[in-house]
Image 1: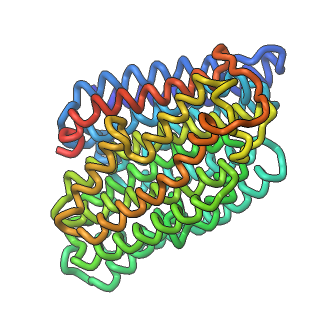
Image 2: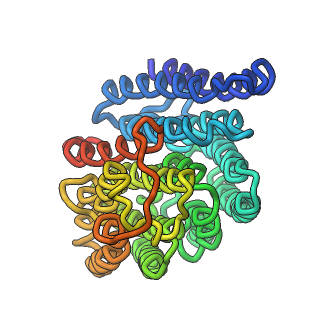
Length: 472
C-alpha cells in the first residue's frame, strides 16, 4: 500500500509540474492564469494522502519500498507533510503577487517538482537515488532564485549555482569513497564500515559534511546565503526555507543513523564546533543589521547552528531526543521563515522597503499582520508555548549530558537573538512612523502570515505529544 500511494503522489506532483506551464504558456497564452489553482489542488491531494500515511505509519520505523531505493516510515511521512504544508502556504501567498509575474507558470511548476524532490531526499535509501534527488532539488532551486528577472535574482542565482555545484562535487566524492569501500550503494551498508580503513572513511565523512554544510549555510560554507536570502525576492526565498531546507536537513538526519554506529568521540566535538561558529556568527551579524531581510538571512544561518546542536547530541548518547529536537525545529523554522519572508514580500508589494525603519508604527495600519509577525518572532526566540520553545527544549536537553558546553553556548546565543527579534516588534508596536497602506485581509499574503502563526501555536500544543514517536 505504501509503495502504491507514494507512486500516486509522485504522479500527481509530476502531472501538476508539467500541466501548469503547458496550460498557461501554450493553451491559455496568458489570458487566464490557472497554475496556482492546479498547484493547490495537487498539493492538497498530496497532503491528504500523506496525512493518511502518517496515521498508518504512526510510531513505526522505516520500511523499504521500491527494492530498498526508498525507506519510508512515520519520520519520513511527518517531514513530507511539513514540506507539503509549507509549499501550500507559499502557493497561497503567491495569489496576490507572484501569480502576476511573467514567469509565474514556471514558479508553480518548479515548486511542485521541488516538493517531490524533497520527498525523495527525506525518504532516500540508496545513494544512486540520493544523487538524482539532490540534482533535481539543486537545479530547481537555482532556477527558482532567478525567476524575478532582475539583477539581484541573477546575481543570487549565479552565486547559488556556483556554490551548489561545488557542494554536489563534494557529495559525489564522499559517495564514491563509500562505494569503493563497500561496493554497495545502500545507505544501510555504511554501518558495516566500523573499524575498516579509517582514514578513507574520515575523508568521505569530511566530503559529506562539507556538501551538506554548503547546502544549508553552515559556517564556513555560508558565503552564498546572505546574498541569496538577503537580496533575492522574499517570495522565492520562502520556497527555499520552507521546502528545500527541510528536505536537505531531513536527509542529514537520515544519514546520521548509519553514521552513528561508526563515528568516534571526535565527531560530536567537530559537529559541536561547527554549531558554535554558525550560531555565533549568524546571531552577531544579524544583531547589527538594519535591513530586515538580511537580518532574517543571518538568522537562518544561526538556526542551522541550533540544528547542529541536536546533530552533535544525535551522534552521542542523546541520539533519539536530539533527532526529535531537529524534526520539531524544522517545523518551527519552516513555518516561521515562510511567514516572515512572505511578510517581506507583502510590504514590498505595498510600496514599503525591507529596512527596519519602515516597520515603525506598522501596527496602526496593519494590526492583524503585526500581531501575527510578533507571534512568529517570539516563536524564533523560543517563548512558550510556541513550537520554537519545544524544539529548542528538545535540542538543548539532548545535549545537556553529553555536550553541556555546547548547550551553554547555544543558550547564550539564544539570548543574543532576543536583541534582534525584539527590535521589529518594538518598531511595529511602540514606535511612531510614517503612514503605511492599510492591510487587506483578502490579500493572500496576510492570510498566509496568519495561518503560519496559528500553525506555530497549534504545533506548540500538539507536536510535543507525538515527538517521541518521530524517531522510534
